[in-house]
Length: 319
Image (tube, rainbow, N blue to C red):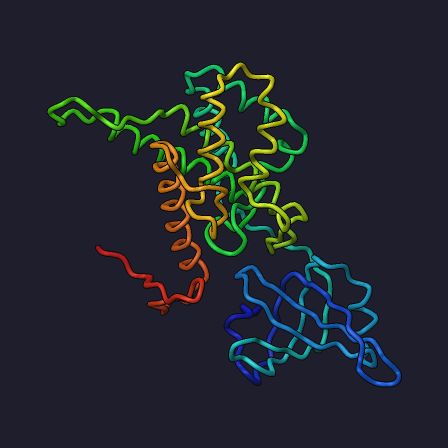
């Protein structure tokens, strides 16, 4: 029976499986002999580390394996405190059984319906123009939305977008149908505009993140630029095909650029319009609730608390 890496205890012998990443190093000796620092990450996102010395029989076998290879290994756990360390007794390449985290076809259908429901023909055309780009249509529906939290799985960006659209519809309904202010002034929101922002905002995520086996990693673009910049770069390249006014372009750029809320979170500027404020709050709520789903998936069945970003989060819920 296979064991999750996070459940390994010191001295335990077990069978694990996961994706490998190798880091070739050299002994600080006169011979300068090579060795491999091996990282194995399983589907619970837990990792274990092993030192593969060049005199071991396994060394040439592992040396031939490529990063991202999915393996099964018989191991002995040598350390299980802050980091899990293992000795590998045997290892073989196996076919990874993929586990779908979401109903991708159902999400695609809901996204298509949301796009069809946009009444603003200019915004609808902009979405369609962006989706015809080969660099977008190939990745948009499979990319993760985050590195290591809620939505950090294949199809995560698609799920993130569709849930954000649902939240937009709910929030817009509250403000647009509010009729209890005596002076009649209401902070109404454009549902079409915010729905478009939900769809386009994820473009930068799909260009900055990718799956490598079960692991999420950043692309070169993702390491160098913020998601919002990557989204806006695509929009700038395509927006000339759409007859938007200067004010509409400005508002779209502002909402996308400020969507993360704060510069330390990846925002290019702070939100200053009603749609920008609402959009940032909606995305953050979606992100935070996705984190609780992530914690529930990966915590033990008896766990009451789980750590996320150095904070202990309570897993219970009011019933």
